[in-house]
Length: 481
Ligand SMILES: NC(=O)C1=CN([C@@H]2O[C@H](COP(=O)(O)OP(=O)(O)OC[C@H]3O[C@@H](n4cnc5c(N)ncnc54)[C@H](OP(=O)(O)O)[C@@H]3O)[C@@H](O)[C@H]2O)C=CC1
Ligand SMILES: O=C(O)CCC(=O)C(=O)O
Image (tube, rainbow, N blue to C red; front, side):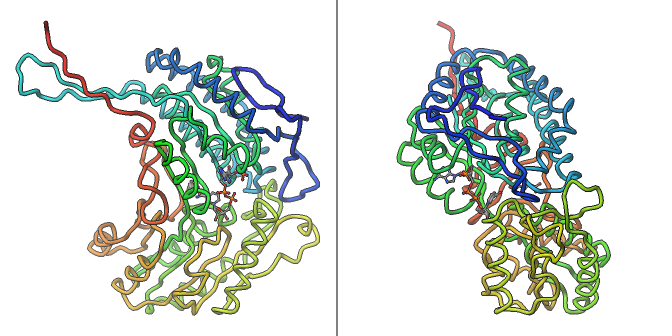
């Protein structure tokens, strides 16, 4: 089946008439559908439709706009089973995770719909007794959303929902690898009766569709999640035009295990944080610092459990870890593992799983290294795959110093019952999101999401923080005649 762009409230064929197959990473010969391979002309049409729709969308009340979010949430919930299956088939994460992500998209829409009843400004005392001085938040206009493949429904929705609620119109470009999940979201908004032009979706590549969104002068803001390389280049290009930019980039997230930690729980936290979604999360655990007093016990349990993980077809209910999302991604992970073998000691994994039923897919084993030098590539670069580097440390001070010795600053975790050290960790770790006795990954829609250092540009998504990006403040001095 062919899937067209969604522009001005209708499904439209791409200007060049070209389509790209959407393949299953478990078996790339299985094609889910053919999606529009759009041109800059398609983007320009989408932007012009978003621009046209903006004045009347902006005029609706918050609850009126929220009603469309609620309706879309209901529609997605109603077909969550089918959407989750498609998500698994196009991205490769397990069905359990895909179902969780689909329902998370529903919760995000519901959360932002509920924000319609929250204050959107403040009253400020004026020096004049006559003056009513207040602020209000106003939308920006047509905004561009460029999204990655690793959370193909949650991330698009956590950008779209606040953008729309606060009165912006949207042009979204989903990752070329995973367009089906966004197709379902757009279809839900279409069926919810969202006014024409408020939501526009252009399928295609980053270099063509993404670039045109970035450089189009009618796009007032860009929210981007993806690689550092592309993110920083978008920031530069957009800054030239005075556009607002939000960047969510990579991570090299640490987990510290102190000597008083519950080791079974710490192992569970490590495995879930590092290997779920095949390690393809910006919040994935990739460096683990373990106190020397418990290092051997922790390492042995971690290796034992890792050997028991079932890697395979992500649609099967007993599978723990599916394939990487693409051949390119898999090759990149295997290349980093080969680099790791030269720099450190491999404890487990490190290969393509030797199972005949997996040879066509983009599979790699969950892998763990120890004796990793701190300047090794596997210790410093984001791998975006199921690879852990273990470090033995002497106490909290050495652990925190090593944890902070990274370009990134997204997420971090510590396993301990020591309240004093947990509190110090909260203050001393250089990360936007901090976990005590829980994994580095995961995000709740009502809480801000994002990082510092090389992991972004300081802007936060989700929660009340989302309003900062998708609105501008207006200060009003109101006096009687
Ligand atoms: N922070 C995160 O959550 C993510 C981080 N990554 C990191 O990035 C690495 C590479 O993954 P990849 O998918 O290539 O990430 P990219 O940064 O290339 O892709 C993210 C999004 O940006 C688009 N894009 C690509 N080039 C441009 C451009 N010149 N202008 C505008 N938009 C563009 C992509 O389009 P398209 O791909 O469709 O052509 C996609 O929609 C991963 O291995 C991982 O390390 C990747 C995904 C998410
Ligand atoms: O940890 C999560 O659930 C979200 C992670 C994420 O947004 C990402 O990897 O891009």
